[in-house]
Picture 1 (cartoon, one colour):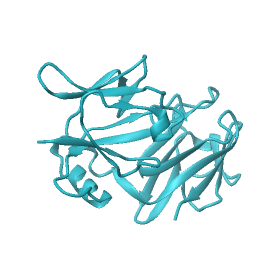
Picture 2 (cartoon, rainbow, N blue to C red):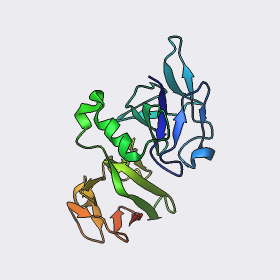
Picture 3 (cartoon, one colour):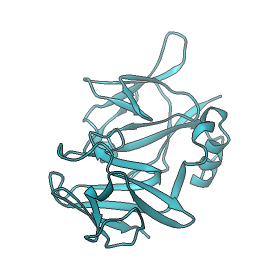
Picture 4 (cartoon, rainbow, N blue to C red):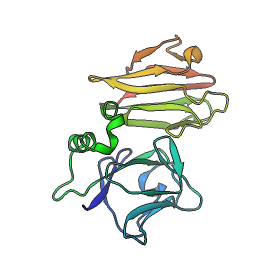
Length: 217
């Protein structure tokens, strides 16, 4: 089986990267401010298996774990900075659509425990920081579910006064939702909530942080 990487986020979302020796991932190419200038590289180990290793002490994240090296196994999803990648079987002809990639993911036996959760948003959700330590930064969510929190391995909040789990973003049908994971420490449009259907212009407040939500259509 010939493998490749599919980019899940950012300007290059949907791009297929062919696995090749010494391919280097850089922030300049992917436009990810949390990825290092030279973040990681692909290589073949002594058993001729594809792997990725971090450079200069950077981290690779897969699920709730992080490390400096990963084996590139079909179906694996991992992150560098805020950019996600998925290991797929290399397409024989043209690049697959995201629907085809989702079907492939759902059919991968090794991912059965999370089959019911993984999805692509019908319309991406953007989080734009209007105040707080990350003012003028933004996250764009193209798949989910995603969680946000201080020192999170997913969507990282750089405010140490905030809890490790602040909120979860998910989708029901065609509607994107936000769910509180920290009670009334987070407000939407100035009010406490449990789950809230996201509309463009919604404003989320937690501590000194003000975040505007947008649906990208």
